[in-house]
Length: 146
Image (tube, rainbow, N blue to C red):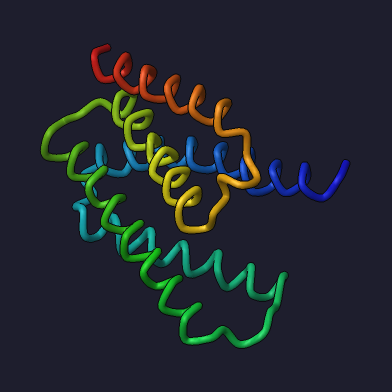
C-alpha cells in the first residue's frame, strides 16, 4: 500500500468513523441534560487529553506562532459549530439523523476553499469532484426533507 493510500485511510476513513460515532455521543450527552457550555468544556478537556497523547506518541518541534494561531482558530470555529449542533439538539429538538448529514456537508466548503486557497484544482479531477459535489447537495436536500 502506498503512502498516499495509507494517508487517505488514516486521514479520511478513520476520521469519518470517529466523527460518525462522535455525533451519537453528542445526542446522548444532550439528551442526558448536558448544557451547551458544559458540553463544549468537557469536549475540550477530552480533545486536550487526546492532544497530549498524540504529542507523546508523535513528538514534533516547537510550533511557530502562525501554527498556534491556526490551530487555535480551528478549535474556536470547530467549537462554535459543535455548540450549534448542541443548540439544535437541545433547544430545537432537531433529529440527529437529519443534522449529521447536513453539517457534514462541510466537505463542500472544505473542497471549495482547498481548490481556491491551496490551488488543489491543479491536482484533482474537477469533473469527478463536481459530480460528487452535486450528489452531496442532492443527498443533503433529501435528508432535510426526510
